[in-house]
Length: 330
Image 1 (cartoon, rainbow, N blue to C red):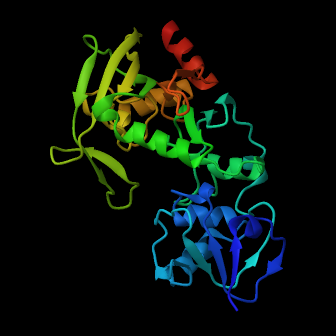
Image 2: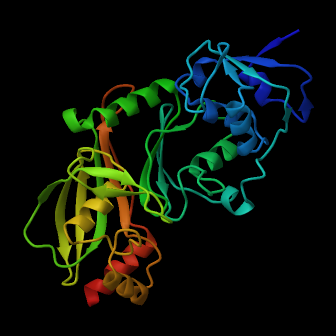
């Protein structure tokens, strides 16, 4: 006989071998989650590769149908699971180094968690990465019923990162980001050190971007007329002769948008191995830089609960402060 259980019961299983098919009823906190992320959370200790395999093979069904891992779940959906061994505890995919990492909290309430993400760590695992911010938090914040990324930052970009603590706040933040090109309700302000002496003042860069994966390379954004609309505003903050500290505001949020736009106008972000040029890389080595110097400095947006204006700032990390001091001295 098929047993119906809630996600809470699966989550609390300890080394339990289920002999039959299990059916989960998606609770409110599971609404709007991708199926794969929902399964990762409740099937702790099960390798992601196995989760993807049982979804791909049709052993996982939602409301009786075969589905893909990117399906968005709704409250009351019936998720069928095959017999599977569940192990309570930490995922073996996360190293002790990752789990012990302390990520500074810039702001937190019952709706949102805003972190100061360090450079060098991805926001989530995948594509050969063993884990990221969201996986760390799900293991260390076991009291949290719901925690999802509201947006992304590149692995080597530091600064403000928003996570939602309720399904409602996640939907709200997604709406803000999605409608931002038209309504401008959220400001994402970045600081970057770019190569060259920026001429003039604020510049509006409106260059379409298309995602490409050159042979033997990682996926990147290429400037092209047929690409998706991408809008950035670059404002010089301080000039250092061969370098310029820039403030960048985004009108859209395309992959690698700032990095691609900066390189397209001849001022690549310092340390950017993907979009930078050979000359800047030599200087990067001299300065001891190990990543692109791009920092998510400030967020300004209306709070999801009461619409009050929320301003969150992330201080410069040590490596950016050090390099700015070096280039200032020449």
